Image 1: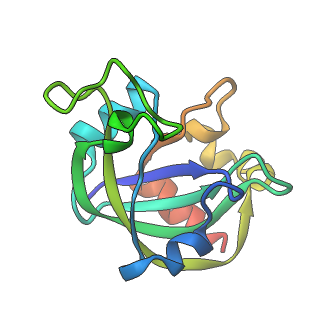
Image 2: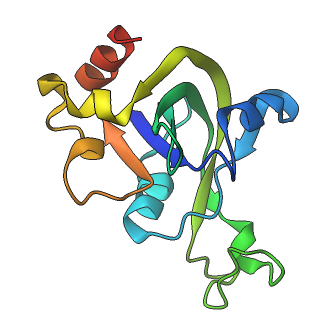
Length: 152
């Protein structure tokens, strides 16, 4: 099993939105970064655990846990001209973008803030806290995962 962190702005899609979805499951669509796309397409597997991270908000941080329930498949929002994630260079016969489906597992008992994460020397190698890393999806080691959960 692998561990991940996926970011979303809560004004766009929050942990509560995921909780309220039918089956508490949702496609993680709209990712338009090749490195993040490759992780979803090639590396994420059913059963992988994912931290849900609220970004670009008053207190950015980890707010919950999700699980990958469907492995990478073409992101259909790229084919829809009316969708804000439309990409005219992506086609169903040759998709450029991929997504996975995630399922709500639980909310954390509290938000573990970005500031808090940055202060922990045990997390110095966590991609989220490294300067200049703006990816919306990133891997987390098992040791980082367990340490973060111990901070809850």
